[in-house]
Amino acid sequence: MTFLTPTELRDTLRISKSTEHRLLKNGMPSIGGGRLRRYDQEAAVEWFRQHAHQSTATTMLEPGDYQCPGCGFLGIIHTAIAATQLGACRTCGSRDRPVRVTA
Ligand SMILES: [Zn+2]
Image 1: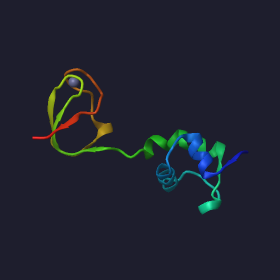
Image 2: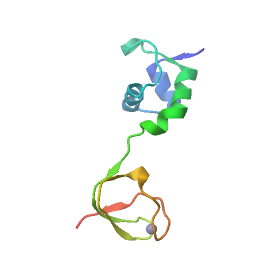
Image 3: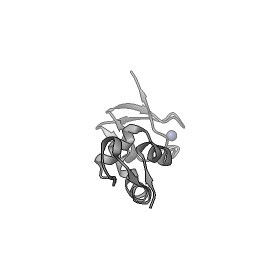
């Protein structure tokens, strides 16, 4: 069993301090707290493997006009939607995030 300090964990997972705190809030296993917090490497990495994708902050796209960065197709988003829920561009199939067009 290998124990990591928070800094070592962040280096291992290549995450920021704020991401570490968010993961902790979401239930990433750790021992101790504050400056004495330690992570069981195997448990933390395994948890990260299974849960990290659920903890990623999702970018919300506010209602408005958007343009596909690939083909320039213009579309309107009527209700706020998470960027991850957005389908591919209906014209070129690009999955790149559409760019907000300001009037
Ligand atoms: Zn497109």
